Image (cartoon, rainbow, N blue to C red; front, side):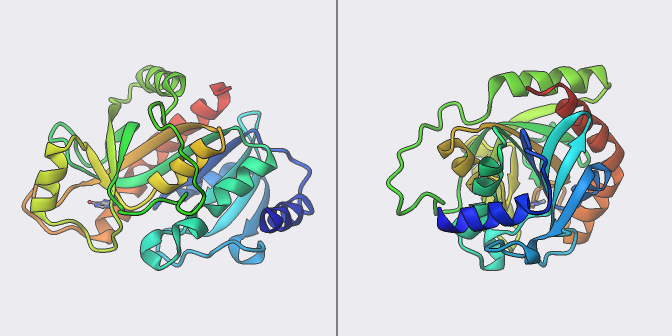
Length: 263
Ligand code: HPA
């Protein structure tokens, strides 16, 4: 709590904006934050924030206005696979909540497991499977209900906006793995059997912490590639970033409208 206060005091020293919505922009999805009018603070300057060094992640906290809403955006996130603890990677969620955010929108790049999906699709996360083998609340003895982890009204709002914008939106279950190696084809087959539609290396820890803080959560995945073994070709981080570039305009338009109408 002491640490959070230090981070919050530092941020509030740079802006008077009290954000209502927090958004985490995943791999390649950061450009939206450039459109926010407000202040940009590199993570490295904020007390107790960890810095991500993954290509495609800028590493700024951006606080300001977009579509008439006060928001705080993470332009890039740090990951468990970089060696940070789950406590460290979820710390910014605690700070966003303390700054005032009651809603958390999490975005990520993911591999498509569901064979109806294709590269470049967007998926609303309706539920998740934590396959990281660890939990960010470990040590806290908080038995958080996860039955309604992803807010039904926000899922419906997003589906409605997507349909208005002519986007063929997918919905499904996101499974989180540790990474950083991609999965084997056998792992993907197993994940399909246990009910996963997309796989990625983030998001679930942040969602668990957001729920423990009583926040409403919306999750969006950009399907950047089909998961291992589905298309019988190798996967690469380059492909992931290239796909996010292709969907950038569609993604930004959708998210801007969600922010406008979310409450
Ligand atoms: N697997 C795991 N994480 C990912 C993938 C994938 O195929 N694509 C983007 N992030």
